[in-house]
Image (cartoon, rainbow, N blue to C red):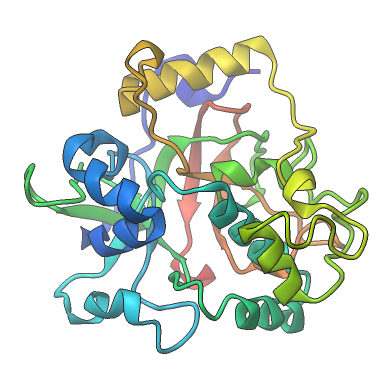
Length: 302
């Protein structure tokens, strides 16, 4: 059954509006994508900006202390946020997939240590964007309003959501790490990441050095999905990308690596420690994949 937002074309209204002004994280986008992002952030502005009704992540805190690449974020007047990672490469995606698949605090810390030279933020949920903000002041205001607590209607991701579900955020390329119901995969290569974490990270950067780590080719398994959307879900996805993000295949313009909501299963190994630390609210009205979904942002979850 279609969601209320899908049928009526309306947004849920939040009476108390807890709004915070936030700045788009230009430095972080440039660092994550390297030279490719640094050039295209000025030529393809829609790929990097924060669009209205998107989930935004705070980037003020580095994953590992002493991260020099993000030093400017601590000197700015507003929290720095992003809603997309820009045009990142596959090794970067795999490192983030690995990090958020950590099943325990100890495993999380071990992966963090292996990523000591991978200078990324410790992403945390900031809120839902209420206005559009550009990644660079070349095109306009790079500061936007973000709803940090209250009711909001956002676009659902790859997995169904039901009223009462705990909801977490995830990057769209992480869908390969989950089953159809949004639970963590436990098939070969996913039950537990084994072997030396430094070897796994090196395998991502150069697959020829360690073609298989502890018997598993993580480069291959991390990119192989068992989630298959039906034709209607794909149509909803494409239509949303075209209307909201300006995605036109013939023009080769794609906003990728964006943030979506999904259910977080709190029992057994169906969710990881990396999932549970990303919970930010509850589902009010459920939705099928890539339909508008009503959520309640709970600030005490963060």
